[in-house]
Length: 274
Image (cartoon, rainbow, N blue to C red):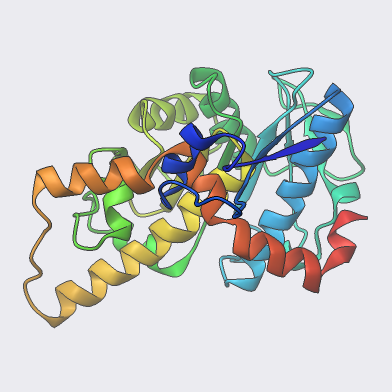
């Protein structure tokens, strides 16, 4: 695995949201890999770390919730959490690999049927997506009952301005891939979708990006719910919202904004790499 910095790739620096990097300063950029095995291991490490972060942030709800990462060698297969295991305990060695039909290829535990039905279709319809994240977080659940999209009320919410979908056809626990296809269609080309009466789903070109969009979308839902409860919030104008999205809503920005949480969780819980 090779790392590079924004100082080495100045054109990429603007997409991290920090602007040009002054001489003598370094900002990390996503790594590159010398082999498929190396890339697979890194994706699994990011996946285990993302689960630990979701657990730390209180996004777990019983056995619900899942994050997936496309396998770099077999792109129709994906890695996912084992069914019924606490986010707070997941390690790299616990992750399960399933194929396009939902059969376990590698791993010792079963997979949540709803995880396969939703994520398999998201990965199928979005070949650009490496990872998808869904959990029953409290503010995402609450906001989803309004059956509406996020408004550009805050700088952080602007990352999703005109870049998230709405799935309004709740039919209970997802048990078939047909509903997964409908969710994939509602997601469209965007980074996220609000699932009515269910919660949030986010995607990314890396596990870190998908995880960050989920974290900041959950908080944006919380902020909008608080603002609506307090009075009548004022939205940011469209031109400004689009400008902010350009600055903070790119795949690289999503990856970069998870770096502090990645550093924190990997230092505090190094057993996730086991």
